[in-house]
View 1 (cartoon, rainbow, N blue to C red):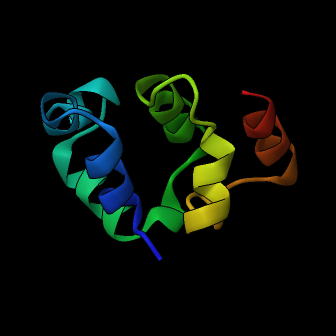
View 2: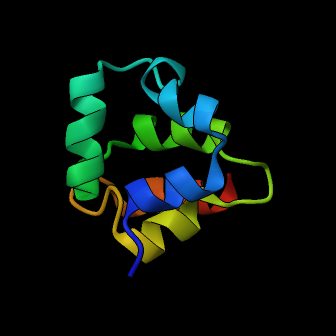
Amino acid sequence: MQTVDEYLQKTLSKAKYDNLATELEMPKSRLTRRLMKPEYFTYEELLKLSEVLPSKIKIALLVDRSNAGIDRLTVRQYRLLKKA
């Protein structure tokens, strides 16, 4: 199973991946923690991440595949991500 970090490295250009903390408006230390434990991504962080990913990629797929945000998302927020 592919980690969120591996997925982002594969999906994003090197420049975009290297500037991901800036794109997501979060400190690099927080991004590193989220990539190590993606279940702690917040709804707001996942929304920002969805804006960085190519448009054909649905953020809900990332949640389903890697459990990103699983410990913090409500059912309502998950449903909203599926529509994003």
